[in-house]
Image 1 (cartoon, one colour):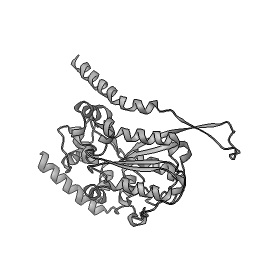
Image 2: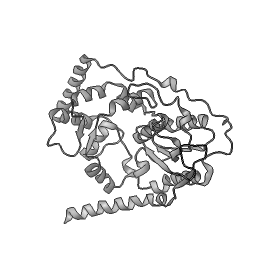
Image 3: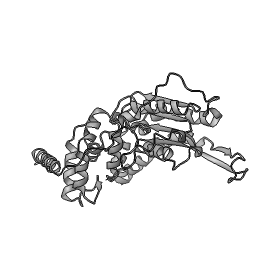
Image 4: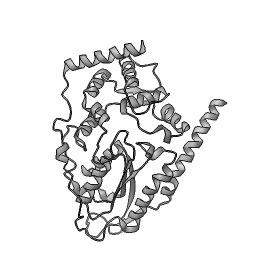
Amino acid sequence: MSCFSRRMVVRQEISDFSKQFETMDSLRTVPYTYSNAHDDVPSNFILVLIHVIAHCVGGLAVHIALLGGHVSARKIASLSCTSSSMYFKLTKYALVKMKLPLLPVTMAVLGRNTILSITDSSKDEFRHSLLKSIARIIPRPERCISDECEIFSGVFGNAFLHSNISKTLHRWLIKENITHLPMSGLPHLRKICSAGFIVDAEGMNKYLIHSERMALPTLYVSGGKSLLLTQETSLLAYRYMSLHQPGFEHKRVVVEGFGHSDLLIGQESHKNVFPHFLSHMRMAEGGGGRKASSTEVRGISSCSWEAFFDSDGGSTLIPALFVFLLAVFFFLWKILYI
């Protein structure tokens, strides 16, 4: 009965949290009628646009889809991104971790089974247990008494400020929501982090050169405290859009007292963050998404993405370095846990 009660409390808080989205759900969809100039579309055809809110890697995926030509901006009424954009500027500590060949070593250790279990260790092979032990001892800004949270933070870094998250939501996140970590996408993410902006799987820039595909109003939100990504992520995106798409409204917001994921799941997000989403969507639906004129915006400097581009996309893996780093990791593990 006590287990059922705790489950009910979790569900109740999640239900209360979901109410933050009710106002967004009440916003009507935006109907647009195609011009007769489109011969392949009936004149009475109505396109229903959507509002997109993307976070972290989700923001990278949306920008890759748009700038890569996989999704047309004409299908999106507005775009809002938290802790993400077409740029991905890590904090110095996170960048050092990403530049070191720790990830190639990790992928080599994992082998074909690239999914790391967080909550269930009964079926772990020695290699997975070793990696989780290493993840627990990696330094980070905040520590947690939860073993699952320590493993997750060791791999990715602190995803939120614990002071902004309720205990009930924290328990749900680590016990029910995030039970496994798929690692197979991290090599591509490493190339993006090394370059500082979105690149393809080979580390080549195929996206920022197509700014004409980002014809839509945008909002970029950063937390006032940089945990994983710096505020430069939203600043560069705002400048990029203002320079290349001056005909649309663009806005950047830095919310003090927030870090990364707590921008969306924090206890005070509905007061400090969500109103920016609502304002942006209402602006787009009210016809303010496109400016009256497409004159060039003054005072906006060009963002040089070439300066951040790393042609090889990361460090070359050397077998001898594999052995050395694994020996260091195993030595530390034995000192601290045996």
